[in-house]
Amino acid sequence: MRRVLVNGEVTKPSYKLQVGNEVSVELEPPKTFEVEPQEIPLDIVYSDDDIIVVNKPRGLVVHPAAGNYCGTLVNALFFKFGKLSSLGSPVRPGIVHRLDKDTTGLIVVARNDKAYASLSKQFKNRQVKKVYSAIVHGVMKDDEGVIEAKIGRHPVNRKKMAVIDQENLKSREALSIYKVKRRFDKFTEVDVTIKTGRTHQIRVHLNHIKHSIVGDPIYGKDKYERLLLRAKVLGFYHPTTGEYKEFVSDKDPDFDEFVKGLQK
Image (cartoon, rainbow, N blue to C red; front, side, top):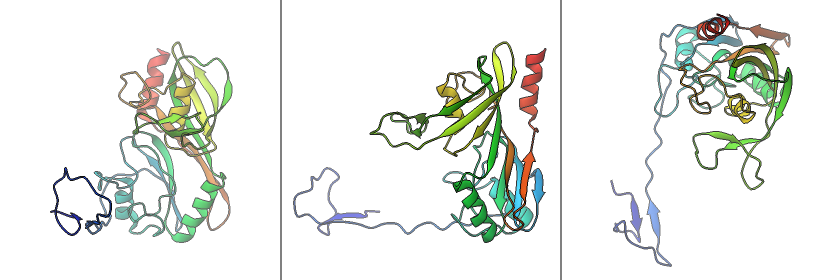
């Protein structure tokens, strides 16, 4: 359909606008979308009337988005629990934080609006404990360290994030603290605590210090097909009781299999 008019008339695409021209654009009405319940197996670590803690498997997208409107964690939760918090985006009900598709591990979801508001505030105020486990390339020299480097959209490849140190480019502060767990001949197992929640933060920061995560298709260079990054520890205050709750998950068959291979 022809939806762009100049002075009320259809013109050729090559037409050059003149001073005083009136351009009108007819926009398509926004598409409505409802999340459909889908029966998808889930590893539920904990649930009550306020929250759900899930051990997310590799390959499961957290919420529907363009080109991926089904087969997500939200679809699965709708099937199992029927209702989630109505706050936030309609396609992200109850979602207060997220994990990348290929990252495994713990994620908390709000079942009602009170829980959503409480958890969102805790994430914003950096009161949530988030520890990730990863296998990285190379042998780390220091037993522990701090990576404090701003992250923003890559200036050339807009699908990637990057450490940004130019003042004229948009970026946000990011802080990661790592601690070496085990060293191997060519790899290191490391725990990373993040104080901020930037997109791809751990992946970008570790790559920045020349220790990319094994299996990272965006920031790494190896051909291993599985990203060895796991959300290992998640701690927060319960929205209703105020009690501090902490969950730990070491379940990741691919992660464990890779480590066993290094120990042979």
